[in-house]
Structures are given as structure tokens and as C-alpha cells.
Image 1: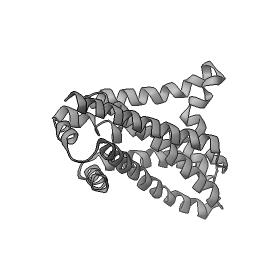
Image 2: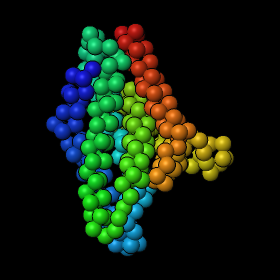
Image 3: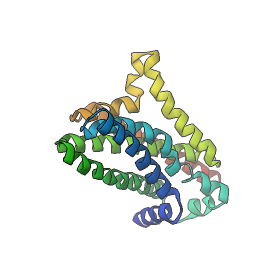
Image 4: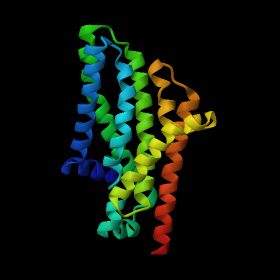
Length: 226
């Protein structure tokens, strides 16, 4: 599996995908950082990630929409399905490699923490808890993005499905409080307070595992048909 992780991770930087994802996120994050620090005179590093979560919603498909859809469209999916490596390892390899790109992006945001240290005393523990919540949110998004990519050979369609689902979870709580537990971005909103909510953490992990399992099932069914 680690050979797949290495291959997929390198592919993000052999193509513009990895650079575009990291670049877009940091550009938008910088804008919100400037607004919070210089306009609102805030030195709370964690609050910027409220905006960061919104950015993530729209750029996650950059990482995921090509992962399986492109394999299917280009015809290389057959090689994957007939390879000695199990479908589970292939899906997990793609998931882990995409998650590593997010980890790198998070590490880059520490330069903003360093800048804030000159203006005030940002709380490191709260910042780390926020980064954990952000990673859990990103992993949930990536897992669903993989699922969307597995059910179509069109990258654009996979991207639209992914973004559409994320936006839908934003507005579900507006219809009924029952749907509050289905809003991933609302669950993330608890982490910038510096407290790890066990229920939210379990929900993120469970959602991620469910999407990965569904992706594996889709790929296994396609393999059996072939």
C-alpha cells in the first residue's frame, strides 16, 4: 500500500494539482488572515480557520475528482482492477496521499502563527486542536470526494457532486435542528474553541470510514462485473 501512497503523492507534484491546491488555499487564507489581523485587529490564529473550512469546501475536489474518475476514463482502471494489489489498498493509498497534501498545507499555515506571535500571544494548544479538527474535516471531504470520483468517469461531474454535497450539508440545519449532526462544517466549528468534542470526532471518523468502505464496494462491484 505504501508504494501506492508514494506513487500517488508524487503524482500530485508531477502535475499542477498539488501546487494549485496548496497555492489556492494559502492565497485565500492570506486574504482572510490580513482581514482578521489588520482590519479587525485580531490575533486569534484559530478563528481564521472558520474561513479556511469554507475554502476547503470548494477546493477539495481539486485533489479528489481525478483520483478514480480519470483512471476509468483513460482506461487504466482495468489495470488497477486486475493488479495483484487489493482494491482496499488502492483506495486507502489514494486517500492517504491526498490527506498528506492537506497535512503539508496545514504545516504551511504555521508561518501565520509565527507572524501573529509578533503582534500578540496566540494560544498554541488551541491552534493545535483547531488544526486537528481541520484535518478531520479535510479527511471527511477527501473520503467523500473519492466516493464521488468512483461513480463517474467525468472529473467535472465528480467535482460538482462533491461540492454540491458539501453545500447541502451547510443548509440542512436551516430546515431542521435534526440535521445539525449531518453538517460537517458545523461540527468543525467546535474545535476552534480549543476543546476536542468526542462526539464530533467520532462522527468525522465514522463518516470517513463509511465513504472509504462505499468506495471500496463500488470498485469491487466493478471488478466483479469485469
